[in-house]
Length: 508
Image 1 (cartoon, one colour):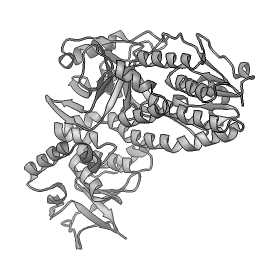
Image 2: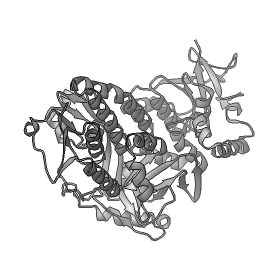
Image 3: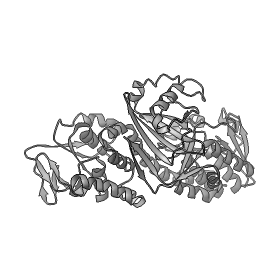
Image 4: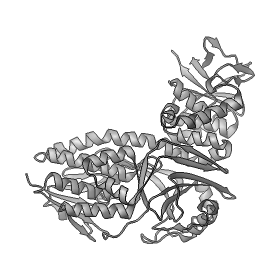
C-alpha cells in the first residue's frame, strides 16, 4: 500500500524516521519539513551509550559509521573536585558534534529518496490534509503539539530550579568529565566531553541563587535564537581557567535556562503522531534527547510498516511499546536531575571520594557500580574501612547515647531493632518523619525536623526519603535513619554515600 507521510522537524529523530520509513515502504511518499536551513545546527555534542548505539545500528548503520569517522569514544567517567580526580570505568559512550550528525543523517535521507524541504515552516496542520500520516518531530517547543492541544495529549511540564547553559570549549577533555568550582558567588559544575578532534561540549550548572549572586541574569532572553550570552562566557572562562588550561569557551545560541521535564499521556491524535522531545524529555545527565528520539523513530517506523492498512493500530502499538522504555529513562533521570539541584551541599559536606560515589550512585546502587568497576568500589570501601575500622553496615552507630552494632536495622511500630534487640535511646525520643510523595512538599517536612537527636525517615518515595534524610544529616547534623523495604546493596549504598547513617527495613 502506498501512503503519504509528512514529517515536521529535521532534527535527528525526524531525519531518522523519514529515512527508515522510505526504506521500509519505498513506494510511499515521505516529505520532511524543516523551518531552518540544512546547515543550521544549534548546540554542540550528542552522546550515545554503547548499548544505545547497538540498538540504533540494528536499524541503520549510519550512526555507527559517522561516530567512527568523526566522533569520539571513551569508557571512563571522571570527577574533578578540590584538587582530586576520581575515575569510574566501564561506561562505554560515544559523542559527536551535532552538526556532523545532522549532516550524515541528511545524506542518509537523501540516499533513501526522502523529499527534504529545508527553510519551510508549516504554519498549520490544515495545509497537510492530503497526507495520510503526520509525524511531529519538532522539538520541546513543538508548534504541532500546540495545535493539537496539550490538554488533548495530556502533556505535562515540570521545571527544575537549577540553571544551566550549553557551551563548547577548545579544550580537549579525555572522556566524560565533571568539573566543580566554587567562588564567592557559590558553586558551579560543568559536564564536559569531547565531540570531535577540535571541540568539547561544556555544559555549566549552578543553583538559582548562585546564578543571581554572580550577576548572570542580565542577558536579554527575548533576543532571537543564535545570540549568545557573552557576559556568561567570559565569567565561565575565568572561573574554569585552570581546568581549561587557557583554552577558550565557545558559544552557539548559549543562554541560561531551566531544564524542563516533559511527559505526555497520549502519543498521537487522529493521524498526527509525535516523537522525541515533542513528547518527552529527560535530564541530560542521564538521558540523551537525541537517543530517545531515534529510538522512537525506530519503533514508529516499524509499527507503521507493519500496519500500513490500519494506522490507528500502528500508532497504538508504537505508543504502548515505547512508553515503558521512556518511563524507565525518566525514572532514572529524576534523581539525577535532583542531584544537580543540590550538588552544592554535597560539595560542601562530603570529601571528594565520597562525593564521587554519591554522584555515581544517584540512580544505581553499589552492585551495579561494582559490576562496571570493581576497583572503584574497592577504593571507596577501603576508604571507609581505614576511617572506621569496620565495613559500613557493621560499623557501630551511636544513637542518642546508645551504641548500635550495625547499620542495617529493623523497624517495628516506630521502634528500632538490631537483630532481636530493641535499641534503647537513653530516654530520648526518636523523631519519626513521613516523607512527602512529592518533592515540592519537602519544605513542610524540613520544618518538622528536630534541633538535635535522631530521626527515622519513612514513607514518601525513594527520592523524597533520601532528600529528607540528607537535609537532616548533611544540613542539620542529625543522625538519620531511612526506613524502607530495601536489600543489603541498597542499604550499603545509602550508608557509604552519606545519604543516611543507617537503614531500617520494615518488618511486619
